[in-house]
Image 1 (cartoon, rainbow, N blue to C red):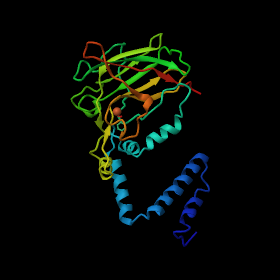
Image 2 (cartoon, helix red, strand yellow):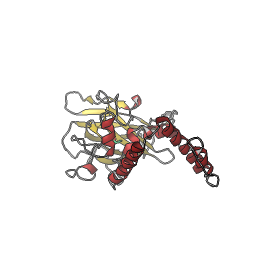
Image 3 (tube, rainbow, N blue to C red):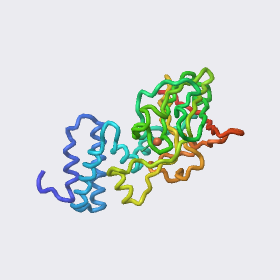
Image 4 (cartoon, rainbow, N blue to C red):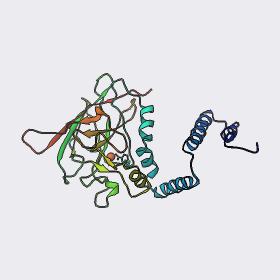
Length: 277
Ligand code: BEZ
Ligand code: FE
């Protein structure tokens, strides 16, 4: 095909998919090409804007390394991660709602006994977190594993902060025969996502703040059940209504209540797991 024009270029590109063997890949590429071309027509992209977009994506890739994933952060702040999550975890059946994994999970956190303090007595408001892991119809699951991680009061995860041990404020806990778990930590604080890269530049250009409301991260697993990736958010946090990555769900917001007569807080939550299909 020659003499391609604004009017027929999209069809010409789509026609080149004719010999794509994988049907799913072909369907995804067709949709991607259609939407990308429609977007460029819609905004009538200038050549300078095209060059700026190429430079932005290049800088995003260059910011990535083993501990920093700027593309995931970009997906998060554009709401793409939560849209993928929503499509893939439609919920119901007593299962706890899921939310973003985020870029700060690391494998290999230590297996810890019930009641262990993952802050190791570090600064922050002492908090006890407990509850059960249940089936969709409310039966306890013994031996479920809760992989937990959170920031220190300075707003940094251990992997972002050379002054913290690698597994500070991280740990894996197991439910007992009543499906119960229990650990000690500190109350999480709200914190900004990293803004020293290209994602920070576009957040700023959009006039958006970079804050996430305070939360604890969980990955809950048990044999025969779907993996649950979620958070518990702190009731009353000022950023619950404007999370920079759109991850808040009302069902995941928990009261961190002061225990009678003490300075310790407690947060209670029962997780529901969906049977694997
Ligand atoms: C987090 O909660 O760790 C997180 C999620 C998305 C982007 C940045 C951080
Ligand atoms: Fe987080």
